[in-house]
Length: 442
Image 1: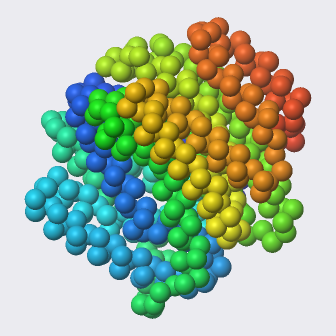
Image 2 (image 1 turned 180 degrees about the vertical axis):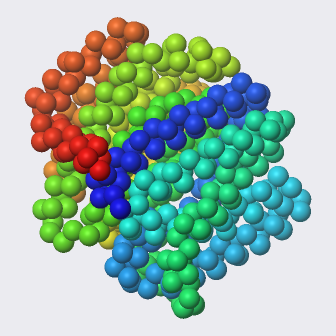
Image 3 (image 1 turned 90 degrees about the horizontal axis):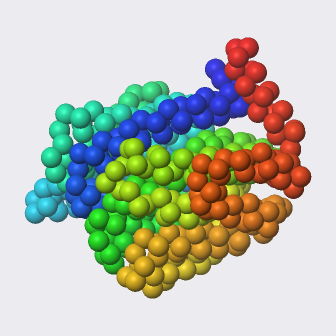
């Protein structure tokens, strides 16, 4: 059985592979489907995934601390399951008039079982298995899209198939723990869970909206073509979150287990340093080859490069605030993040409404960057990290874009600055090499 550090490294490797498959799917979509068709499908999926966040009350993130501490997880499961069943019945009724909803209606309960399974695996530090399962979300849609590609409904059905098949596989993996979870049905409102889950849901919606989900507003205020362009450019920019998302899974469970406040903060600070440094260097490398990348793989979307470069600033801020928020969840203090995130998402929505009708893609990426910075600015009071070097170094990303291929020469200077400002330390590097060494020896 791998240690938590080994599981994190396995997760990173699998996440890189998953991203590779995911972008292969995007390439197929970008080349086989009209921009407008993909835009419409993306609009529908964004609405569905936002609704799912609300219905399943933030599971698995909200579920993990209660499962780890054995605080009535079966009561939580049955309460959320009742909400899921109610929503599924409503979707089937709507599917009578709108048949393309049917695959999503079938997928919804399976997605909840998938999320519950992920929560169980996460509590056991099985992060590598979580990421392996995540491959199903891209591999099965890829198979479907290769076999059938015709209309908006095909794209929606493709992703639904990924949700369903992967969910069933996840449930099979944790079947023993799952049966232990459900063997004692308790139909009672879990008040202590709701106290933690409701802030997580609100914050999760806010986080989603400040990410790709605000494409739902773009579909209303602009065009479906711009929804498709924003979806593609957001996925390209999101490449640099491979490390943050891998580290955050480890951080959530680790923070739940540690008792001493200093130990919890040490884990957080190291995670932030490693995450930011590697995300920044990845962003610089990406922008240096961005024009070539888009021209070869996304010919229908040529022109989105500048938007990717701007959005990468927001992704840098997103990487850090995700870790801070994950840290607060692990401490069962998700409510502390509620006010900062609500303020940020309100700013995001207001700026979207003001900027999108006039500036379209420029409007949405600028609104996203400002919202992400606001969230980080308001959350940073809970941890002792330096905001100024983070902001300054993040601004180098669009500068490297305008340098073209020559932007790659910034990397050695950035590494030097990272060490001088202690945004990364030799001890952090030693921890990384130590983890890698443990994998090799095993």
